Length: 274
Image (tube, rainbow, N blue to C red):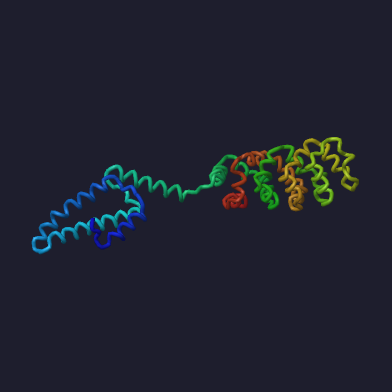
């Protein structure tokens, strides 16, 4: 077969593109168009002396156009079929994909919104004692840690946070380090003799021998809160310390959306506005 001018370039283009699946009915439409062209071209070639050459040029022109069209579709994707229900389904799928990519809703935001619309939140905002506790910046900062918020649901943890002896230990850097070393090495009741001598030695031993205190302080988030001077100062206020066991506060921290809600502007606006 004699190659026409441009055949090599066309072959190279098709080989580079590789196979591509056209939409249903596309090939039939292209073949139908090609089959109709010779008839129309034949009528025009009667006025030319070289009709056969003209016919070949027309055919190759159509074939080249079809190949270029296929190449464009292969690179950019085939257009969706818009006939009947196929077009409707394609449009619906495109719309759904757009929605999913732009939605991007964090579960925490959903839970926070649910909490802000709950009876627990309404009760919290109507309780002056609980609102005073949550208005303290150090308390809010500690509660934003999900691990601490989960731990504070325990009555033992809340009692530990209010414990003056524990606060005094954490106020002393050396005593705090000694207590943390003892806790992380799993020292248990009866370890008084293992505690190094010092001003806080007796207090450390008491904490280690108290199952509820030592268990609460093994939680790293609880120790981190007590290591904060601002948090200890807040707990030194009798009203704030008592508010830890406030029924409205306890009910609020049990809610899954409580921590996420603390960072919401509408939460703090409600806290300041009542």
